Image (cartoon, rainbow, N blue to C red; front, side, top):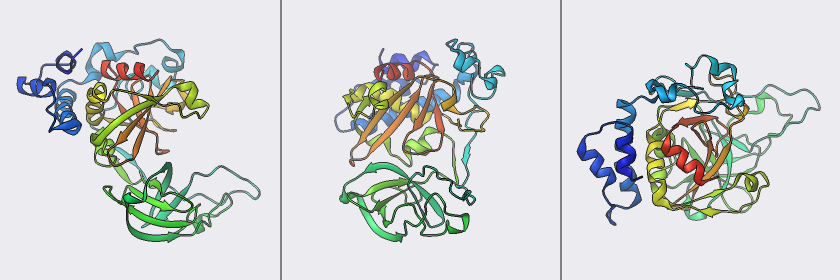
Length: 316
């Protein structure tokens, strides 16, 4: 199926937009230009064609008890069977400061530091020093499993080091910590509102600058084996465009949708390699959710349909 066929299949678009998205790419425009054209079409599609009003998507496509048996799915009105209201923003509140744990209680901690009143969490992704910008602060590394709420103050962290800006990224979202070895990226997705995939995957992560892609099969991912299998970038263009244009939803604990990890969905693991040397890890769930896997926040783009299914199958 061509790009033109895909977009015609989901609704009638102005002819010039369809032709622009389906036309062969000119070398001077590159991937970003092709994605921009496709994203424009996808945005028009999602505004004009609301999948939650389409009978084919009003009911689950499969009868997986782990999905259809979920209590939230019985109403079919809160995002499990159909998406939430069009473009309703997802608000991610600031990270709460923990209460003092009970004496002797230990718990796993994700790496973090507090800078400018915001908590940045570890992505486990290291980058070259060429991406480092201005040095911003030092952090203490004094926080551990037994630290009380009063210790979570400016400059507190679970890892000591020097904090730097990252070239090409908003400091309110991404900073780097230099501790031992290579600089490591830390992201902050708290105190923000996300309307569409573009607010996260575009404005903050810049996936329009994708220069390569690969996936890791589920069994390898579970075994922590870095067996990468390359994907053709051109085949991902409709997926990336639709991801940027899709509504964002909360699939975390306590949300109306329920915890995405409790639904028993099959998963796929896709990685987009950007021109600046960074990588955007994506976790795909078979129900059509796409999560940025560099953050603990379970905020997903909702994009069920043929474009998603094709890429999900590629990464199987």
